[in-house]
Image 1 (tube, rainbow over the protein chains, first blue to last red):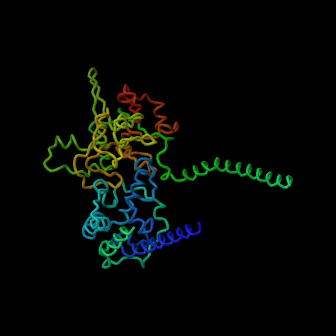
Image 2: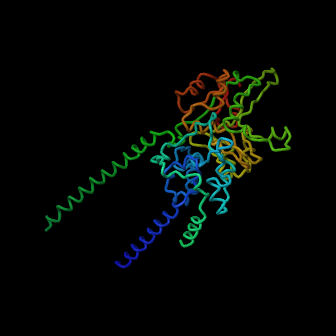
Image 3: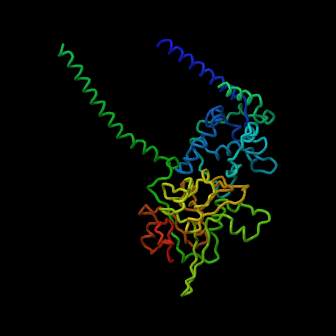
Length: 176
Length: 259
């Protein structure tokens, strides 16, 4: 009994340590585009590592609530992702599509060769003005997020998703 | 010994009974508490079967050649953003482009009387489009709105064939631009959803009603069929109204007067 609980405890420690290491590695870089609303924010609706790993499942789960049950006040909403992560288009005005080259979604998805089918149907840019601009914005989705000037990413600093970081991620998931 | 043993047992039993009563009380009270919390915010509440959204169209007030409702619908739901595929002729484009509301002109064969009306999804209580859908994509929300979940629509178009009102459209081409609240893509079927994004955000009118009122016709009235005090229910009580193809017994949510 005693030895088996010791083994359990040890395993727990190792797993916990792994997650701690993993989360620090994951949060070391950023694919957030400069000028986007997200660039001035502390964190996403969940820690960056969690969102990177689970965003597809979160979105899929909440889409059922929104479309079929009419619950609009969900934590994970694609429209909110886009509203926050789209980079303003300095040349043409408005926003650049989030699935465009080097933009927030495309950055990782191109690297890992996972096709982005969301935008066959969903808008790639936030709505700017117009009669339907009263999109239900969720009050609690970004609750507790504060704009921090020291976290702001300078335009020169970014280069899409960092290759090294993604390679580390890949290795980690293989070890797992 | 026996006396000593008896007392703790008695206490245990009392304790057990009192705890059971407490737990039962909590279980009874808990749903009530949760309910009040959920009701505090309408957006987190979701569609409720306590309401049934419907519409009353006064075809006497509907004006010939007026397309205010159709134009407003097209703009609200991003239908006007669709581009005609290159090389497609007028006939094909007009036959295939999505249309959520269409203006219909009826003429009585005997008297020659002309009736104009907007025709859209009638939001049936027992919708044929839901019956035939093989994937469950065509569905009826708890509040009576019949719509398509494009995530699971496979584009078989059974629902288009089943609908007696020709209310559904199929997207034949890739779509470049959409409104945020109305996603749209090639290979899915769509139809009027009573401006569900507006209703969920707390609005009490649809885009077509707003446009009709703005032009001074006031032919369209949207509201809750289950609320006896709603303007819609009051009007339905006062005026003689009917359903299109009432013989199908679909119990439509959209009703017409002066048909």
